[in-house]
Amino acid sequence: MPIGSGGIYLGLIQAIERKKKKTKIIGVGVRNTNHSYADKLSTPWTPYAKALEFYGKQGHLVYRLSEQQIKETYNKFQHIITCEPSSAVVFNDLLKPVFLKRDTVVFLNSGKSVIAEN
Image (cartoon, rainbow, N blue to C red; front, side):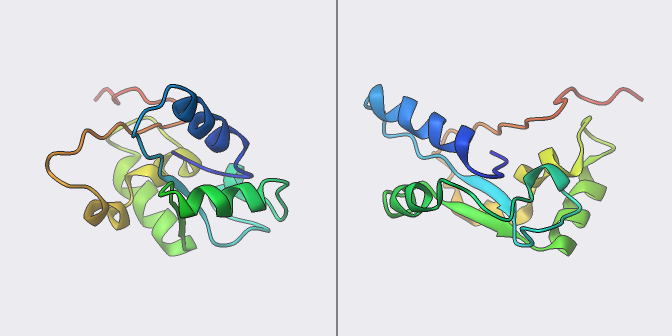
């Protein structure tokens, strides 16, 4: 799921923990925290830094993309789904090796996740 400061990401993790599920949440954010093409994800400071570190050790990972990776991903998917750079990050190829064939994967695209009509 797209991650900026981490508040929604952590809320989802905590909700899953309360349900005692084995689900792992993968966040995708930006490396450049001051300014990014994925502008809704850039945040120079977060009050959740320690919580993000804690849950990272529990297997809830956060991947940080470079500006080039963000632009390439957005350019690849903007004609397939209605999205913006901040929501397209979840489709980055970096995440492919993370999943096994037996995994059930749900992509949370925080933008307009409607199939684009031609």
